[in-house]
Length: 241
Image (cartoon, rainbow, N blue to C red; front, side):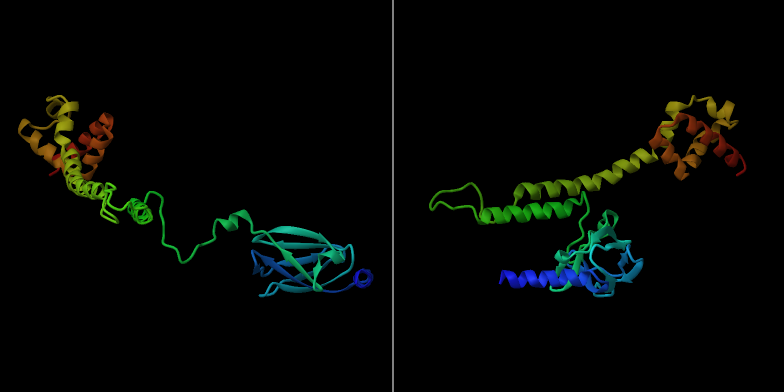
């Protein structure tokens, strides 16, 4: 049997000593690699893999064969009989790193980092599974309700609801408090002497400025210099009313 295999190998080597048509297939992760350029660097001949990853090219023993693809790492082989399986040259290419970033995973729910609802749901599911397999001692209270509700979690959810209701009001109060911010950063005579407003116009002018969306932004930035520029520009338009 060994003599027979040796004879076949020697015969194959002898055949490779002369140029012949080589049949092969290019794969990547067990999938056909399409449009891969197979270049015989020795004879300067080129072939391209088809939709099944298959190709044919003329080559002989010790010819250098290059496999080049825009989506895969390049590969070089030196022709020899040991590369063949069932008289076919099968080559596996590695996907390039930038292509791996673009691989999409299907049949899986979309997950975003910091997506608290999804993460909490998984933790709840895990608690249920863990409690389901926890051994129960007959007649002994284990300190919980089997597959029961997480009352601590429910209490936290209720607290968050009230917190969410209050937050917008708090934010709105801070953003609308432009007049207080102005009084803290401007002297009382600033409006009459610097901006040239009448005493009876000052409060109306503050209301006029507060109506501008830019006012809340200035308050949030706590920018006194920008406040002065803003008041000066608004005073010009206010006098034109």
